[in-house]
Length: 168
Length: 168
DNA sequence: GATTTTATGTCAGTCATGTTGACTTATCTA
DNA sequence: TAGATAAGTCAACATGACTGACATAAAATC
Image (cartoon, rainbow over all chains, first blue to last red):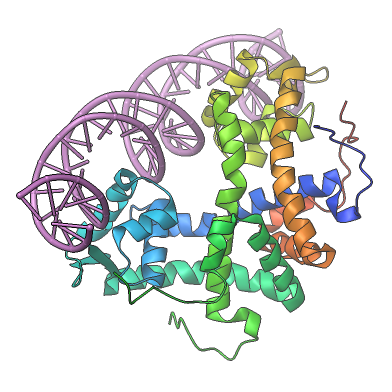
């Protein structure tokens, strides 16, 4: 193992191609997160706040534990950013009607505004990259990223069976 | 402003497509860095050490300031991880011959070993994703990432009037 | 030759975000 | 009613960023 060079591989699997992929991901991800980070800093927030705003925005009524399982962080970590966001009026918590232990999360108007600002910044970058690369490249981009992530993360993307609304 | 939905766009530029791109990047990048992080933890290192090992490995003889300009962090931040890596024998510093203020960095044998271990972990994931997606998808993946990053980062990828690639 | 700039390093303090572990409260479920 | 679950809290710690101030050696410039 650890044979770093020389395999009888298709071109796109050669060592230097793979090496480039690693660096592409590093630079692209860094630049991708750079602009939102600047915007967030104006609010005294960080990337962790962004993720919470994003996933609450996309999943209104999400519970704390659902959010935790998406983010894969501890509740103590989440607690810090979430309580800030609640205290400053970006996120609203309401007790679940069926299960009153739950605190269902949703964006306030203020939260929605920030969410949209953040989205627009990232959208501009992605639209630019997508336009410059074309529809076919976009399909490839999506495919590779999808196959790169853990299988357990993938179902989130495929159909859209939404919340398992009737159950429990 | 901030019209989040409904534009007369090609399919691949629709809001929900862009939204998916954001999440694809989040999950793929997280999973992509997860395995190396575990490996690094065995050495008491973190992701910052990984980046230093990677770029020193790819650019033997790189100076501290060149490394700083790649990583875009402060010298104080770099200092902590770099001096650890030097102290523990993963990276060797030699004064520049032309400019003796410089400390040229390269991996030791031990450093090269760790570099290769880390590379192999990531290579496996990428090769899997590349194989499953196919050569054309890979081209699209590369194109989109390239167009997503800042222009200033791009020349690193295109020609290569660099030092010869010898892996020693 | 003296002065300034550059490359590198260091000390000290702060912040954001992650971790573990222990414990509480309210509520649901068996 | 007893135990499990959802959420939250307190405390301590690690990592990797940051700023600002300062030090040293060597190169470049005046």
